[in-house]
Image 1 (cartoon, rainbow, N blue to C red):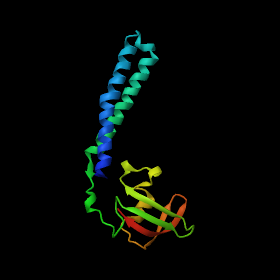
Image 2: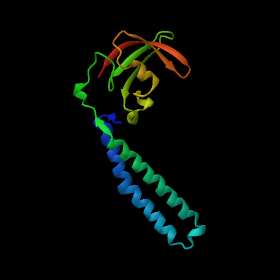
Image 3: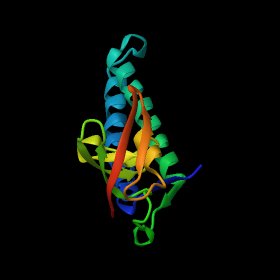
Length: 155
């Protein structure tokens, strides 16, 4: 199944892979070599720790490569604002509490709540997808349901 992401998100993952392969991998290889030089590997905690770190690093690299191998870059020029879709910034108001929130709906790999970037797979984003300006939407969230009104859809 393809994963959709922005060109910025795609390039960020490529940069991370490059860093892990060109900086972290040689560092861990050096740690393994240093630990191996210290003698008996059967009771060498430093060697075991370096080998474990190497395994975790290789798993992370494989995970990131898997993400970009299925990536589809979103053409931001094709994004519309008539209905909520991925890459839209959506301003909503909770009809009960009157609190307003703004989120940008992004791919799962680019989600970051500190930046108000909401993963497309979350219940709130799923509830908003395909809805229009002014729509009132009932969304099932872990603590029950909430009703929100869509106040604004932008890019």
